[in-house]
Length: 377
Image (cartoon, rainbow, N blue to C red; front, top):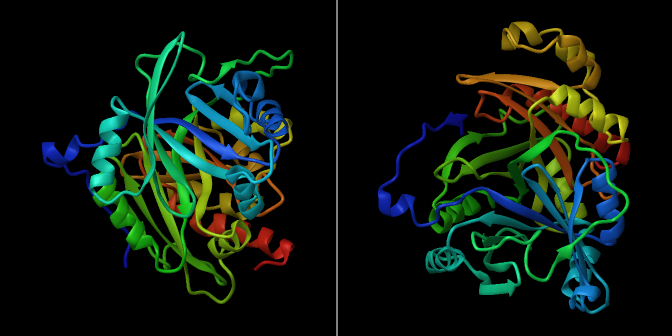
């Protein structure tokens, strides 16, 4: 399966419009301790406090902290009693992404259109109301225990959504320049990539815009395959990875082992100035993968002219790649938890629409070094 880049095709109007998405509304993480997780994302990533839901707001089984930075919203949710599906999720998977919530104009229509095309319902359309208006939400199941929620909030003026109150603690931090979700990557099991590609095509009307095989994404020891799914306007992109045969265990296999199933591998977050953002994130203690300095020896000849100075990129470990429309700069964190599962990508696009194919070898060798240190290669 060679690498293919699919040119955007205009779908017939009837197909194009059945699930119009306006972008990512928020990402919800199920975690062991939401109060501490919120503090971590605030102090390290630069999120600000937004809203809180828990016993004090009439919710008896969980506590949730909504945090925001520019157009990027995370919700950290924890169980506060046993015999709770949230507690079960954290016991099985560790801290991880439960819901990728997508903004829509009509959450009822989104649910009807996706379920009639084969999507398994997770949440039937539900209207939440308070003094600030209403939010309509619905949802479907995807790979593993991950779900997509459809959020309709045009008639809501509150801080986040009904059931939450404004959260204004004394401790706040400044932004690190993170802007919005660029894409979310899912890891699925052996031979499950194509069935999930078909799911996104049939159920959600997405297109496969990029494909990478084990020749593109491989090192001496391991390999994987990946296909990038995108909705019609390109606001929502979901690369899907599956393992491929290699001499040793791939990063996808390691993830599947420690997450105990399929799930979101990493969230890519956009920034307007990656050097400034990464310098600040490192200063606050976020750890990134170590890239060999030799990577930068051939960078000018491989990618051509870029606006940035090479020395700061080399010092920080920022990768660069070019496609027909421009170039991008990207860097990947180490896993942000003790289980080697969830991590983050920081990305700045300077016209490029791709995902850094030219960086795969350097990136995956860096990942393998970390796997080897953990004894999991």
